[in-house]
Amino acid sequence: MCLAIPGLVTELLEGTRVMVDITGVRREADTSLLEESLDIGDYVLVHTGFIIAKLDPEQAKEDLKMWDEILSS
Image (cartoon, one colour):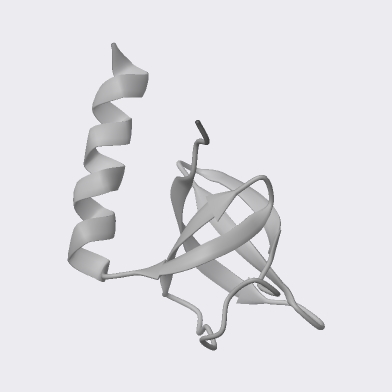
């Protein structure tokens, strides 16, 4: 079983790196597993520092809402 967490791309870095905000924590993530290009404001799914999918914004917001509920319990 793996755990992937939704995040928001906040900055495009050099090469295949981007900065992602995950529940208020900013982390670098690698885009080399993703075939699509990313822009600031895109929602992505991050697993062990790698972006594995680009998310639909509405679905990402729902997922983040559930994470907030889990983390606040």
